[in-house]
Image (cartoon, one colour):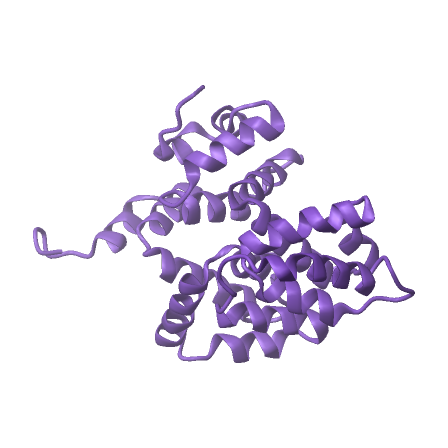
Length: 258
């Protein structure tokens, strides 16, 4: 703007079109503003894009979530928590609100790991019916490092992974959010590698999800996601994107082809 007296994003929009324009404009948007805009879009109008709510709130750090809340209020004039509560309900809403606080405990409490594993088992597989509150409290508040130890203890106790218990005991958006929280506690790069794979595996690419993940993680952990993708699926992320997209759209990310 100082050099030529024009807004760069506006100039790009006037010269580009389609997916390429959307991608370039997204890359020009500060990461926190990008997340806030995606959450606003997911909540506005009829219906809610729960996939976006779950992806962002399950994967971002506490500090990132607090920054998103501030930017959301500044750019859209509303409170993110209030808007989410207006569009959700029940135990799903409760866990979203807990995640919105961005106040996970720190470190590992060795004395709690066994108890948490036993409490999760008793809340699900170990009883008739499900105590959703126990799942929400433990998975929504403990640190990722602590949760990984809880998951190991849970498997020794029950003989199955915590994800299997969640999928057997819960349904719908609550199930999806709980599973996402577990996967992010295990490995955020693996969580996003799976999201990218799912966005491209069907006939017709889910361009919104593909672009959202590529843009939001491009300067965070994309190299780790790339490595996880190849380890999990036996093919490179680069070649998979090439098969599904015009090379001009996602070549900007400069993947190593190996």
